[in-house]
Length: 485
Image 1: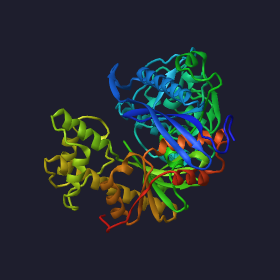
Image 2: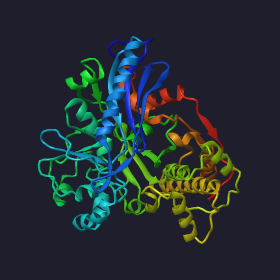
Image 3: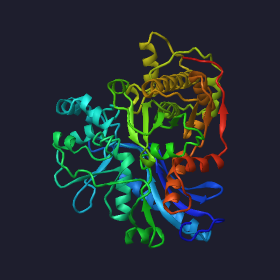
Image 4: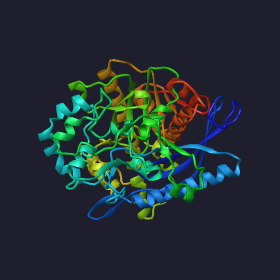
């Protein structure tokens, strides 16, 4: 049992969970017998801002919100006679901040949605061929992967790149580390050895110590700095524990699968669609299919492809709100569900949809390029997004099965998309497989469970952690009504 816990008590952990549009600080209460109970303590917005000639994250404001959330979490726990045992941090991948020898952030971090890395792709590929990159890293080509972003930097001497969750951990503890699941998204990580691909750093002229040393989920990053203790009121021996700091790694760790032949969709701003493996697939066929081999908790491989996500829907809602259209998401989805199933579709993961603004117009333009016409009504646009996502999920899962030589019997949808009943049903129909939806807060659950295991509150591997999730979550099952692809 962890410090201060008994078999019948609940240990308390703080999860900092930040996505591309919002963040939360949550308390996770864990019992060896009843799973994880989550309480949202503090929510805050996040988003890119135009600053210093590019799209960047307002990291100073982001970190201030993290401190505010941890302070509120400490107060709630103390008021309940509880003690927070540790803190875990997860965020989106690939982005980083540059820190100097004095530990100061040199500028607000660029967002992956900035276009600066587009110009570096050719230069990177002339130094390291795409075939060689994939054979070593197993990483899906995306123009915003970290190596392309770093290639756009002009002054790196004396600086280190800390991926966003590692940067938050550094400011909390003073310790510089790179958590392995997120390191695997950089394009500079060896998929087979689990170490940095130092030959690629040299080939691109990057400093050999551009990243801090690696740390694995479940290992302790460090204890909180005195200044953080003063601001938050947390106990002096509170530690930050590395979790699956790439939010998808934490989400997949909490997929409530009870058998091994499952596939998953972590559905949020992006959709991460794939299967879990013991070893990477580094074949040329896999590269051409643009699948990625990212590290999961316990050195598993998340074999997946990025597919467009609910970013398309949220951007449409934002555009419509600016035009004075205020219909609720539930009403939009109900109206979309009433439309015919054979409407126009788009390639939801086309790079044309990466940047913000004018999303409904861009979707209608993409439909015109296919020779079809999309009605102006918001419900028609929403139905197009949902049909296109489900079709993309089905194609991706079929490719994953073909490339890995394994079949799957069920699709687990976790994250925000698991609440979208229309998307879940369309996915079941498109894949021809049952869909099990939930938990919504899979990322936070995975974050907390890795902390709990590190504290000795729960034991076992991913199977045991997933059993905890399944036992404590109301899951919804959708049966396929017929193939739509």
